[in-house]
Amino acid sequence: MRAARVGSGWGVAAACLAVVGCGTKEPTRAALSGDCTGVACQIDNVPGGGSSTGDAGGDAADATAADDASADAATSVTVTGSLARTSDSGFLQSTAFSGALAVWAQGPGGIDVQGAASDGSFTLDGVAPGKGNWFAAIDATVGGGTVLSTIEPLDVDAAQPVVKLLAIDRVELQQVLFGLSLPQQPATGTGYAMLFFQKAGVGSPGVTVTAPSGATVLYDSGAGYDLVANGVTKTGDRGMAIVVGIAAPAYPGSTLSVVYDAGAGARSAAVRVAAGAVTRLFVDL
Image 1 (tube, one colour):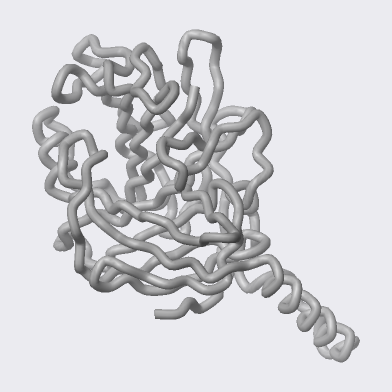
Image 2 (tube, helix red, strand yellow):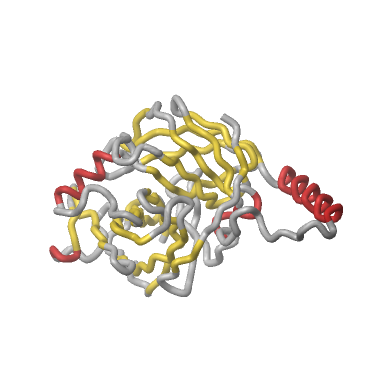
C-alpha cells in the first residue's frame, strides 16, 4: 500500500542536555555520531506543516507550496520493506509475521508518511533517505495483538531503499516482565525502550542507564533479566537494558534523551518513545 503524507508533532522530553545519534547493529540500522545531523534529528515539526498565511498572498503561497513539493520529491525515495516479529527473549531473532500493521517513517523535514504492511511486506512513498530514519509498525489492537507497536531507527540508502523492520513479540516481553513481578501491560501514557549497547557488533557489559523519572530499568543477567532493586546495576554479556514505564504521549510520541555510562562518563542517546509502544535501539560504544 502506498503512503499518505501527514504532519507530525514531536515534543521533546529532555532528561539531559547532550543528545547523540543512534547506534547500529546491522547495515540497515542507525549509527552513533557525535552530532545529530540526520533525518532522526528533525523531530520538532508542527502538525499541519507550518503556519497559515490567510488569503493575502495566496498566489505566492501556492507557488511556495509547489516549490516545496518539488523539493520533497527530489529528496525522497520509495522504500520497500519487510516486517517480521521477534522470536526469542533476547529480542534479536526473528520469524515471519503476516499480520496487518500501519507503518510509518519520516519524510523530508521530519514530516511522517504512512503506509500499511501485510503478508510481511510494505511500500512507503516520500521517505527521506539517510541515517537514523525513525520507522514504526503500529498495532491498533489494544492488548490483543501478537506484537507490540514497535519503533526503531533504520538507515535508508537512496540508491537501494530497502529496510527490515522487526516488531517486538508481545508474549515474549510479557514473560520477561511477569518473571520480575512487573505489570505485563504498559500503564496508560507510558512506553518501553530496549537498548542494545555494543562494540563492533558484540553486546557490551558494564553499561549503566539512568532511569527516566517514573521509569524502571532492567538489565540482561545470564539468560534472563533482573532489576537494580535485586542488585543488578549494569548490563550483562548481552549489553541490554530495558526501560519500562517511560512517560510518553500517543504515537507519534516524543523524543527522550536517555543517559548512560559505559565507563567513560555519562553520554546520552536520543530515543523516540510513544505510549503503548516499544522502541528498539542499538547504541554503538
